Image (cartoon, rainbow, N blue to C red; front, side, top):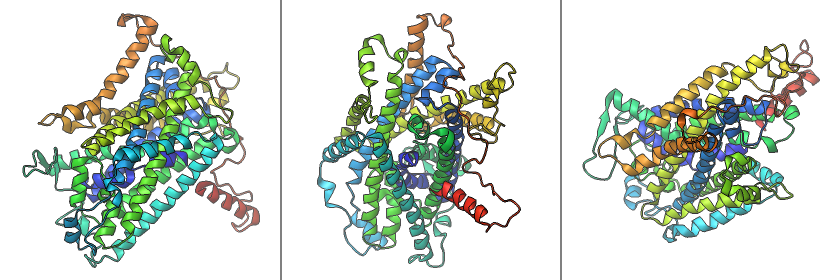
Amino acid sequence: MMAFSACIGFGLFLQSGKVIYICGPGLAIVAFFLAASVMWSIVACLGEMTALFPVQGPLFEFPGRFIDEAVGYATGWCSWFAWVVILAAEILAVAQLWKFRFDPEYLAEVGYPDKELGWSTEGYSPAVWVFLFLVLIGLINLLPVRQYGQLEYIFGVLKIFFISGLIIFNVVLSAMQKVHKGNHFWTWNKPYGFSSESLVVHPSHDADSGVVLRGEVGQFLALWTGVAAGLFSFVGFETIAITAPENKDLENHETIKLASKKLTLRITVLYLLATFAGGLNVPYNDPNLINIQINAVRAGQNSIYVLAAVRNHLRVWPSLFNGFFIFSATTSGINALYNSSRLLHALASIPEAWPLWMQNTRRRLERTTSRGVPLGTVTFSWCFGLIAFLAIKPFPSIVLGRITNNAVVSELITYTVICLSYIQFYHRIKAAAEDPTLENRSAFNRDDKQYPYRTHGQLFRAYYGLLFCILLILFNNWRAFVHPFSTHDFLASYIGIVAFFALVAAYHVKSDGWNPLKWRRNASMQIHRPPPKVVCPGRRRGHLEYPNPKAPIWDEENLKALINFVWCWLK
């Protein structure tokens, strides 16, 4: 539920409209499905490794073991930086969401019953909201670990119910369509369509729209752009692995396995249904969706779900939705600070990951309170949330867009390394399972009933995730190269790649000297520290096994097993 809460920030509610504008309502669903397939591949890679070895800092520990120590350390720092940037992005989004105000001309055009729709808070300085919500996020992260986890569970439940309600709301609006009676797919038909007619490479409000791509090439590039834009909405699923050392007994509760499967299922289904339902009520060329593309991310008036309520002349609902978007972005920011602090705390336990002159700082960051809170890393990571004060700049929405692009690229680098780590891990444990000299070789056998978590075709999924992530890293912002060349967009999208390889090189210089020819790979391939987890070979959680197979389903024991199975997947 913490991973679910981390994924559901402002991405789904604001980015879905952006993807629909870029791709069209039908192609947007395909874009989100492809982005979900990447998440589906990576979360299974990370989940299987973490279920077998629940180590601290798995995002960099596994690359360090199975690829190279320098790659592991560089991945850890990139991932930490991505999460503090996401923290700033979520707070920036909160500051933007308070500027909730519709253009009166738009309201008149769609026939809204009121001449004005907005909040009186739009006149406040964004710095006020940044300060207040930074303090709130910091205080919640100082709660004892157990209370923090319980609070995150409540946040996740509220978000699940809200998104489910949002889907039902849009389906009902489509069924009771006031403007386009009898045509529930009017946004999919001409003059609109399954996919958008064209892709504007550098959109603006000017009469000259610049480079416009049409036809199959335009649709393909629109789809690719939609996948890259939508992927930000899925960032956060690695929380499952980050929380592993603080989870319940993994052998009895099988937390990692169930969390990985539940998260993939819930996120994919809810995102696809929400995008589909929202696309039924708002055409992809709505002026407010176009403004999303021009100005990156603004406020709730750019959300397809708020627009659906406005276009159907509903009062109260738009403000209610915008208020929940603020709650959602805030809770996602809370989780971003949690993830960044835990990653930094795990890095603090490794002296080799730090330069010599920062060893005293590292020791201080390694400490925790009596309630399990790493106070130093929470405070240090929180300070980077001050980046959100960029909200006072003239064009904060553009800044927010570039910040999110930078964070996505850093996370994509992490996901690429995770997939590569899994490929090495897979072959290493396969060799260990076939080694007759190992006493516990059955613990590494993926076909053994004691193996904690495995999925079919996982090696193929790892290669699929690896290839897709590399392509996304290289071409996530291909539009920056189209004339006129955008230096700021280029740097925001690609500086993370340079930083990653610079960190890898710096660690090799530290250990092997300045001569690149003498650099050597240092991967321990360690699979005995900590000892591999195994689970009870009896009844596994998440599997439906009837105690009395020959008895009918309403048999007391069989019925109890069925109820436990359903509850296991619902709770």
